[in-house]
Length: 343
Image (cartoon, rainbow, N blue to C red; front, side):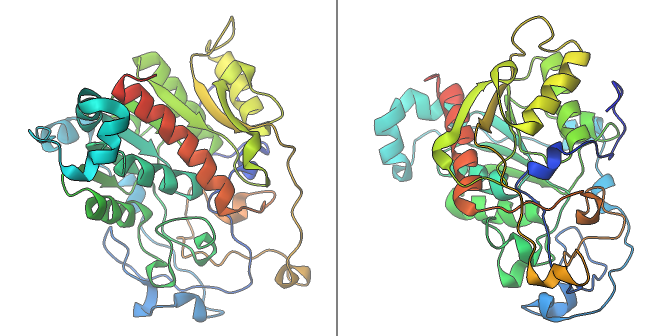
């Protein structure tokens, strides 16, 4: 990777170890034009049943993001509730009344809502976080069902951000949730970091976007935690949090260290970026029966011009929900401790 950020590009093998958006079957899903909620493909509960139909080239809806000034004007956070609802009884007994009030007033922006991000958002919603911006350009794929909370047979083809926002509102009706179906890159960065978050969580797969988000947060002084590769691993007890400069074994963390060091972050000491990572060695993927003769073919309802399509990956690694969830929960604990003053 060069020292300059090229929007939407892929580099090396780092993101291949991530947990999200991996596919592996020879079934094809049709894609129909829809609004930002991306209605279920072909109007069926199981669009994956439709085979051998080519995907369609669609407009890049993830680039149609309101500008920073427009978002600054349009996003208005309501005042935190005057009284703490009894739904937070057990949380108050853990964090105290003042701690819960601080959490309710905290604006957390989560980038990447896949296997890690979806569980993380669920934990934040159930921890009284009152202001959430949820960003992901992608739609649910049938191969997401093994690890993503918003993935069901009847949600395939719908926006991950919109679905997760519905789930948050069902858990905590008092929460302000801003779902954005967008791809984080140079062109959208300022808008997606407006209004300025109190805390950012990076659960992005794309290496270029990941580096740029971390760089932007450090330069702007926004507290940020990054999650690295949850895929190709089986042992949750090997997951930990440490400064990026002290991570080891994890290939994605190694790439992040190198690229951010080139930008002056962590070059002469700590990077100041806590990272959720595993020191378990990466497990090479088994080849599914359906890949043996034809090779890998993606079945996700992505658009052909997707900025992070499965076909752009050198290797599709295996994933398990107990790993992606564990990564997400560890990151959520850091966020809640920061927000409540218990760090």
